[in-house]
Length: 321
Ligand code: SAM
Image 1 (cartoon, helix red, strand yellow):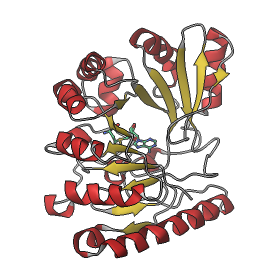
Image 2 (cartoon, helix red, strand yellow; image 1 turned 120 degrees about the vertical axis):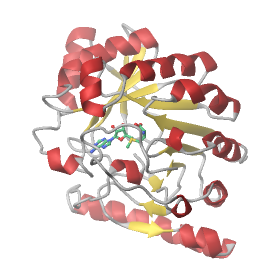
Image 3 (cartoon, protein in one colour; image 1 turned 45 degrees about the vertical axis):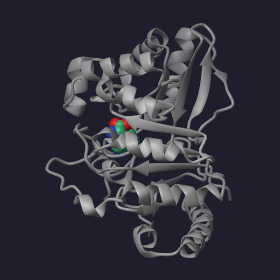
Image 4 (cartoon, protein in one colour; image 1 turned 90 degrees about the vertical axis):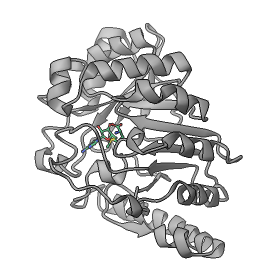
């Protein structure tokens, strides 16, 4: 198995409180518990031998990690790494967009679950205006193409699908709809009814804009991406519940405190921090070879379990969403 893509969580802290993501009053990791930038860089470098080409910084909210632009620079200077991107809630993006671009960030994904300021606030406790300003500045400095990710929840924001398409057209961004997963705080709210099968959203979009044209999806392969000729934009669907995509998945997550999470569906994590802190290069190589075998085994096991989710206590902000 080749690992071409890695998501790296740089903090478990977040400046939003999305109701389906994390509980109130969560305790965060002490600073010493987090991987240092050098440790992250060394892990990325070691993985390039096994095909790593693209990395995405996430969190928590990655823009809350002090000096994040320095990590961007360190990763973008690794010759084998072709693409450094970042997923953000956009709240402080306007402030950081330029310096991130200057230090080698290519592009961003921005999470927006509602385009209605009041509902956005109710869902996240954040101010939508800040996010829109962030997108404006990000476009200006060239952190493009921008993808906007929206978790669609039945009875909450499901009616906004067409508004998101209009937004994509106006803002020249790609929008991607995501099914809510039973993770972290999401477990409390989650039931199959709450997940809006994205096929219905797709039908709704097609009814208004005509047939969606499938594209050859790029990136980590989780999204099924379509083209809307009428508007010359793309929309994507990420369907972990209604149409899982484990086959051939080589996606790995490095958590902020230095564990490898093989898949969101299992509790399994392989700790790598001590190796990075105290081990030799040979130890690290052995770990990565073991990791590749474990990833294949985990994929097979998940498929055998009919794509079930084990009870995942970890919230997305601490895993690295
Ligand atoms: N702070 C950054 C952001 O907002 O994009 C990165 C981390 S955030 C945890 C990443 C994404 O995970 C967000 O789009 C969020 O909506 C999504 N997410 C959190 N909990 C989820 C769940 N239970 N199911 C599906 N997506 C979830």
